[in-house]
Image: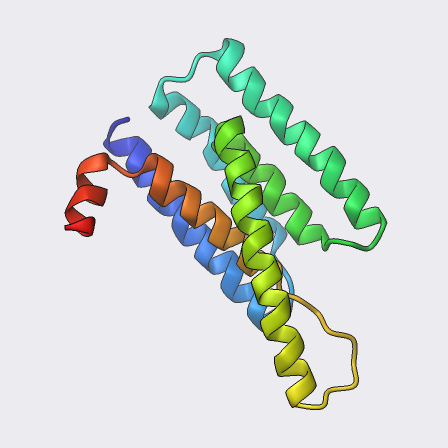
Length: 161
């Protein structure tokens, strides 16, 4: 990876933080943000030296599969539309193995977030339906994967010391 790739990954990390923040505040992840993340992916592919075949084709295939699965979950009212789009555009950036890692970390973080939100909701005796800002869990999973798999090993070793 080169400096351009790392700069793009930093931009992606900032976008994930912004998605989490807006989901907490408004329970919404904006289309313009998902669009910007999607438009950044081809630049990242180019900067990372990915070949059109099979690398980029695999990224596109995983994104299409992710959209199909998560759109189905949206149709069953199990997931919000912004969450579906955010996961789909993240699949454009992250290798298939790392995307599976993201989904696992996201599920664990989402479970913890749901428990915390349930107790907060109950303690405040709120009557309306509990709405989980799942963009927070998605962002956490994405940031985890970026930190563990895409950061230079020297940076992580320096932070661990």
